[in-house]
Image 1 (cartoon, rainbow, N blue to C red):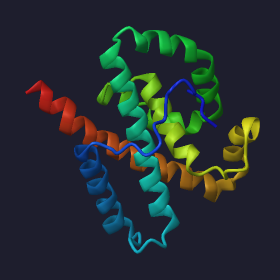
Image 2 (image 1 turned 180 degrees about the vertical axis):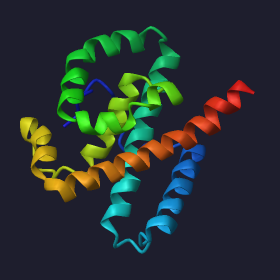
Image 3 (image 1 turned 60 degrees about the vertical axis):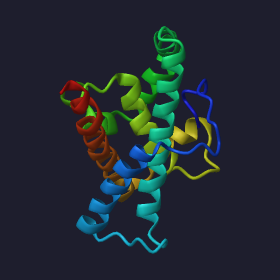
Length: 172
């Protein structure tokens, strides 16, 4: 499910090298800290990698659109407001976990949605669609929801690295 379907996903587009490095560094810390296996057989590591990639690609698409047309983001957010609101309702516990990012790292509501959507999109089975997509979080049980929160925490830490590297560097 793509709540913000107006983004053009360019398929085989590569991440900028600096984004790849940031994600790799954060993944490395999770491998060491949580003893994740980097041999290709750890599903959690795979989810973390796919989540980081999806978020960073979507984020880059918005940056690219915004550079071409700075007014675009305001129109786009307005068009997406119903979907963004519904998304926040369904995943309220996940949003609460990262709500502090709006103040500490100046993360916009649409970027928070990207964080949550990137996490969810890589955890819901492919065959689940529409309302079932939202219901999946409620139905996975306590362990499943803990796994969702783990992936969201990873993204929260990745956003922290991103903020430190790019936003703080520009402020100097």
